[in-house]
Amino acid sequence: MSPTVKASVTAAYRRRAQPPLTHIAPVKGTFYYGSCDGVLYAGTRFHLTPGSTEAEQVALQDDGAAMKYFVDRPGAGWHYVASDSFPAGPRGCAAIAQIPAHLAALWNDCRSTADKQ
Image 1 (cartoon, rainbow, N blue to C red):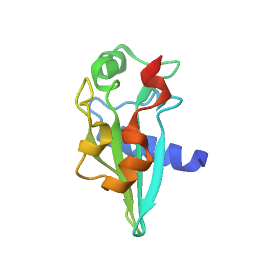
Image 2 (cartoon, rainbow, N blue to C red):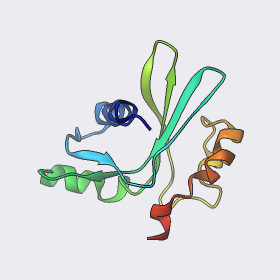
Image 3 (tube, rainbow, N blue to C red):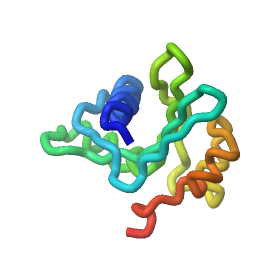
């Protein structure tokens, strides 16, 4: 996985988060990436990085535990499209309408190694 893709997906989440989240990064073992019919898809959880503010800590304490999903259509750049419930439902990302079913299956329904920790 390209660090540029992870940085672009993280920037897309930073743009939509309220309050704005500056000190975040994808959680190791939770980043999913793939393409379908020329459209790129990604899913990840985020955690705080050093220097986080109290407002960021409060904002991410529940929301950060949920998977976030992103789409990059040709020429459009990465955009946040959906989030799992917390706790995640039993179908994982297979329940996310914006993620193609066969891609969710390849991603093992987004059941990451982080889920087992």
